[in-house]
Amino acid sequence: MLIITSGRKYLDIDAYASMIAYRELLKAQGNVNVTASTTAPFNQSVPPLVLDLGYSLDEPIEGENSRYILLDVSNPDFFDKRVTPSEIIEIIDHHTGFEQYWTNYPNIKTQIEFIGSVCTLIYERIIQSGHTEILDTDMCKLLIAGILDNTLNLKASIATDRDRNAYHGLLKLGNVSENFYKEYFSACEAGIMKDFEKAVKDDLKIEKVGMLPEVIGQMIVLNLDNFNHEKMKEIFADYPEWMMNVILLEDGKSYIYFGGDGVKQRLEQLFDKKCKNDGLLIIDKFLLRKQIMKKARDVRPIGC
Image 1 (cartoon, rainbow, N blue to C red):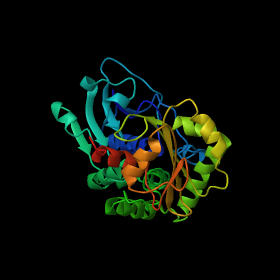
Image 2 (cartoon, one colour; image 1 turned 45 degrees about the vertical axis):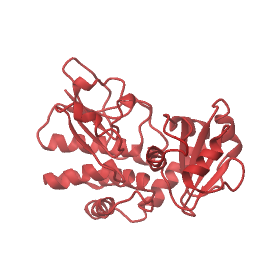
Image 3 (spheres, helix red, strand yellow; image 1 turned 180 degrees about the vertical axis):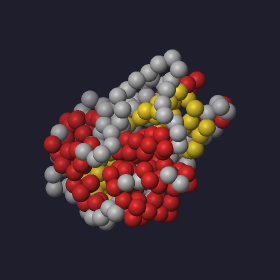
């Protein structure tokens, strides 16, 4: 059995949509025994609007003869708990940093590119294969949602021309309204505000990267009207150091809330920018968590 899966802590819309689309592509190419599944919970980027479309993941299975394809993850520390390197045949990811690591496994096919969305990579594969018949309206909406979420409606600096081409191609193929982005982000925000604490905790990234705190949250909201600042501080109260990247679509900025001794100094050094007040650094453009983490990997603190 060929199993398409992703990370172990949570599943976001980019992984969810790309896993489903890649499963359908492989089936169209004649791979009958292929499934797409996860043992991880969904985060707030997978709202009922998405779950109610005509596609879903399969129930998780595992067996002695299982082989795995990993999407949207290439760090082995975060693979689905069922996976071991000897069972992997392919990795497709847009988080850089582990390209060299996987050269030690020549039997594993890898595509690791710093691009906006894995959904873009899967869309390109579908187009190149000629199996555009699988791109019906619901499939296009899935892939569009993945691109929208990961590129902040194509306004983040991480968005590439390839992401834009995929987005517009999917709109056309699926006859999807250009206002779909409003439906999608509104549905995500409604889910966040329904259970704010769960939304934050389900999307925490716990990983030590350079100058950053080990615990990093992220949330995308249309505006800050309903954002619960006090509840956020309660959620992070048990962590010595933390940061929360709140991306505000309405004004195109990232609001980085943080706590812990020394975090302010390190963030100001990393971004070469002073905090507006204690516990908040405002970046005058969209920055995704993965961009912040990449920047932290690339920049060494003074004195190191």
